[in-house]
Length: 354
Ligand code: KG4
Ligand code: ZN
Image (cartoon, rainbow, N blue to C red; front, side, top):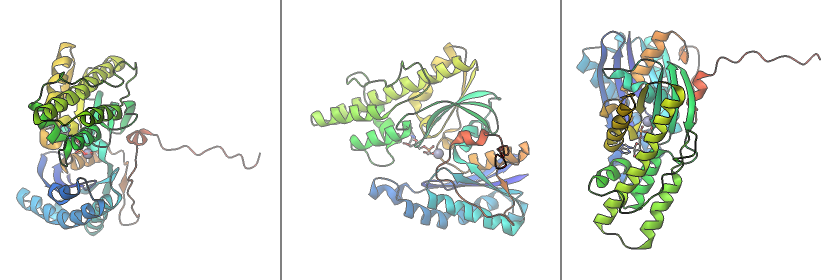
């Protein structure tokens, strides 16, 4: 079975071809960073318009390179949510248009499910069940993953996501958009500990996070006096160390709590080198194994959507598989990952006659 994946939830247009027997046959990504950089962040309307321009040429390109034709596709998977409504609608509309024309199903997928399953694209891949640390621009969650579509929330951020904290702190330090990778780069040149920042909720006794206070603490330091490059690098290093300390401690706590031995890290912040080093070292010491997606599949991409679509099809769970010839479609800008695990609602008791 050959699945085309289309990702358009934010500022990256991603497409990919995943074959259930032959694996990933091709993928392409177009980043809109240059388009939004003058504005210091993503402009939703510009994002939608650019996705319209990119999806089909990129799709044609990967089909040609893989020696495949549109007719070879057995399903089209796309990101149904969460994300920017207009950007999601572009992917959904193209996916449903193509699916209708080809007479194949269109599968609306959860963006975070794509991230969550992306480490399974690499070798060696973890087996179910595992704990997943999902750290993206919009989410910071620890999940217990028992199988495709079986996700239990163990803990999450009570305010900002880890990636959001990276981006906002980067702005405070005068770094442009996108801030996370730039801050991580600046941190390489700095020394953690010269400035002291809090490790929020490190000892809260649960698996939740809080990152907004950390950004506020950086703002206080930045407002106290003018900072030279060295000081900015030291703050970046301390900020990164604080986030990493909390993510590592809570991930290990989640493994102890669940009794599981495998940890999967997914989402953009999972590309952070320092996080990977510390997490792998600490986990190894406790006898746990950690799995990461390839660096190129940490941030948004089409491969994770094509792959998650193929897994869904193979599971034959039927979840989200729509007959696009007959049904309409929608997008879900806000959508909790846990909702995927909710069993179909039972008909409620009818009290009308009592
Ligand atoms: O998963 P992703 O590409 O998009 C969302 O679904 O949100 O994650 C993007 C987030 C951004 O906040 C970005 O700053 C952060 O991931 N990020 C990083 C790094 N690379 C991307 N944060 C820290 N270190 C990095 N190397
Ligand atoms: Zn993402």
